[in-house]
Image 1 (cartoon, rainbow, N blue to C red):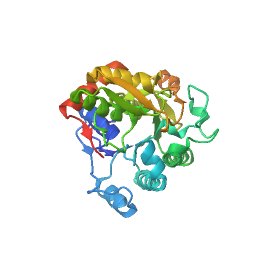
Image 2: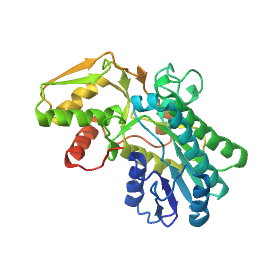
Image 3: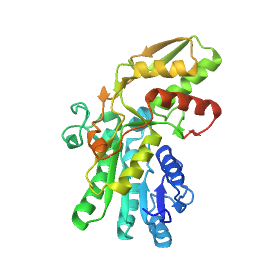
Length: 313
């Protein structure tokens, strides 16, 4: 990658896309292509083709997607499947047809079976049923990865497919209904601390285990693999260890200054019990995370209090 190359970052306003833009800028890249949804609807095939006809990007990072938490995925599963398929198919095929030099597809750990052995290795893909609470999104991401893989195998088109674990950090979505667990806990405990609440009740049992990675580490992985990796097979990008939701809540509560007690509403869904990625392949290829969970929590709480890097939808 040359610093004068055109790099199209799809979803530059989202958490992952904006982190990729920051990383590219920090590395001295000056020709970064970004379009808002109002400027370019990635679901519209004709519009995407017109964009590629006009701009002819050298590299493409597909970080744009329709995303949400457990409730959003359960309530709008048709939209999560259809809209993500539309976005992926349009961007991937126009990138291929316009001779993009390398394409980076970003997926999610939810592509793996809900009862996969832990930690989850890349070869466990499609060996069992998916987690029902986000099946539509997972199916779309599997299809996107497979399309990139097939285009690479059949036609020699260079693609990289990265599957991050649960992400958090700058520019996360803090919407009260559609956010994931990490930003939801940040929002809840900062508010509870500021208001001096005596108790905060959270969904589920708190027992499920999750792995969390700061989004800046994902951007570092994208930059690393776009330059140094030629294999189209999926690569897991994870922190390397997991934590219970209850312990995560306690750490965030401490960082936010919450002094009250935490209670759990077990009538609410937990989602998949455990999801720890095996990222040994990525580490053997020269990438590893740099930001510890405690440092990431501290940084994210501080950003939220300052109103920096916050989305509400």
